[in-house]
Image 1: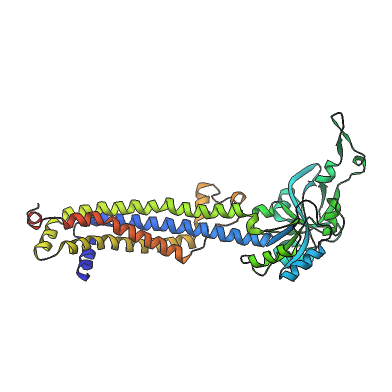
Image 2: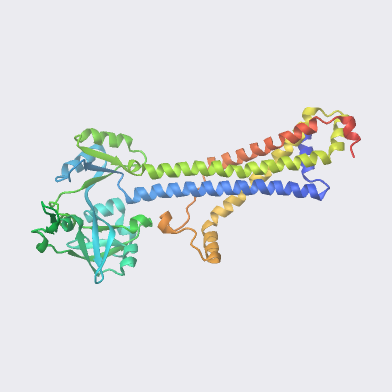
Length: 422
């Protein structure tokens, strides 16, 4: 076995530069294939992990809602969650319209009404502040940095909030068709709020839509009784292992209350990310497969150029199996060298990924990773050891199998004819 391995290594560095160049090309092909696979899978894994982290950071671990109505007395639900082993807080969540400037209106806003202590306890809102403070006293709000930039406001400025429910109450449908101003119409006025703080969670879709107000102000704005909530948000010790906790809570609540975990709410998104990672690997493995065919071509050329040497080996007693192993080991060595170099290059690309991204963006004058689409400010990546091992092993196996056909061709040569080969 050592003899075959020695000959395989010797054949990788032949005297003829043409074959050596082809060998180097084969190694580079494997290296680039492994690099691309490693980088793409690391980015997909990092994207998925960071997405899960941001979802857990910006959402409750689970939400409890009545299947039809608002929760007028959420205190008993908060107590039931506490007995089950979690913590909870009543929240008013509603879409609103924000008027800023003279007559500008923004409809892409979701208001979270809750107590400031609950927001600090579960969302670390104070740590996410860019300026100002978490002050949700009478008619004060905390908005995001994306909203502040979009509306051109800062801490201390005033905004007008319109309730969608109250706006729909302004008009009524006539029995005979058409619409008319309702009796409530003349009494409606928007509510003025003062910006007390500006936050940034680092998740673009959340930052661009969510602002925080006090629970009583939110209830008044959406026409709910004080102390009521649209949902009760809950948190457990571990967001990724809460099956038993959620099961206990469901058993403790009446059937007309629905408990939805963050994974269930984002099932489609998480499923798409998992499928994309598998599809990326399936598609990009063809790069390594092409490199394996290149190795087969290289070794076929090597077999024809070493016909007399093969004949000499067989003449002095080398068996067909020994000749076969020489060329299979040659493909194996190309796979090992290419995979090793590809893993190192892949690690370097992943380590400097954001620098490379910024450099290419400056050269092309294009934003290659727009946060509006991908939600994050930088390209995430996470190298998983099992993924790297799987990529390397798959590449070596493909390269080894790529050498099988030339190896069988070499083993089938007749020694007498091979020695007469010109």
